Image 1 (cartoon, one colour):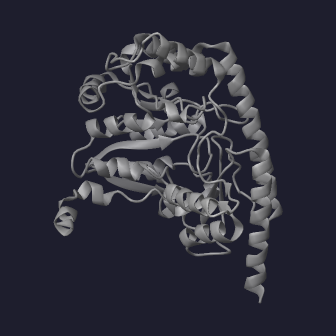
Image 2 (image 1 turned 90 degrees about the vertical axis):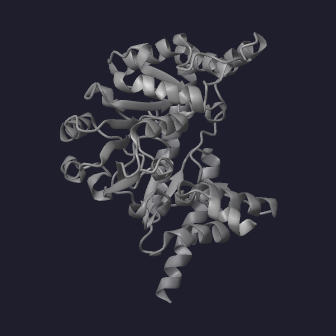
Image 3 (image 1 turned 180 degrees about the vertical axis):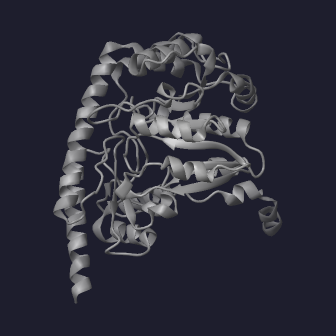
Length: 397
């Protein structure tokens, strides 16, 4: 019976690869239950609580009975606030009719892929890239086409390479800035060059979930140079709302109705009270102050991590200026970074993510998340320094 059931698992489900960061975390949790001290530098989740004004807005909404279905596109008031945010931050005009509110940015990506892809459709990705992107594509019978981006070139898309990869099956290109896993921010000039390289042949899907978490300068929205692009964003990272599960997409007009129909059938709508809390995130002045404090703390941690890595002889060639990740090379120690990350966990008590979670281009790298306290980061970096020192000693024996 079990063998028959296994055969019935769809090819889509079989093509989904494991999410290695979760496997590292699950092993780390098992070690903790056994009494080990583990420094968690693997998961990309803010360690700060959701700002109070957001919490209070959500609680008030619950007490007011806001626990019912909403419009499938989301509250008009929230969509207007999102448009206001993009007007203030990027000086771009967006109509609320182009915005759809979703149960997290992952739901937004799923809906977009469902609307764009047919069997064999290709989506261009950077390599490395966010680990789940290929799985979103494969789930809808699409084909991820990885375009290598290199550290010495700032992990940036080369517009000419993008143009060379365009073909009759191409349906979209997926951009992430600030980027997971590299923390790299794509400058406005490069965004414009990518838009020109595409030349309207396929839509650009811009995942802007880490916008606002930039240290020096600012992130630019794709909408500043490509008004018909698709934007994916949400409240998880900037506003420390990962568990609230709320995201949104800004769509060109031709995609709104198809994606709305998919939302109606697959998800119905985003949660009522959460949308009210999200509006507070965008509108309440105290939230802006809380976010500024979180950003200062992240920047302090970022600088501390980069300094410690440099002291270990593991300098980062291109300094990450966004998100809360450092992607650093460990090729001198290993040619297979997957088991190496688990060795670090077992021997040093530090959980980091193997770079191959983010595509073949991540081989030889580890991703470290500094979404943890400065005290824990310092302890984690001290443990890593001892581990790498031992590795170098072993190599000279």
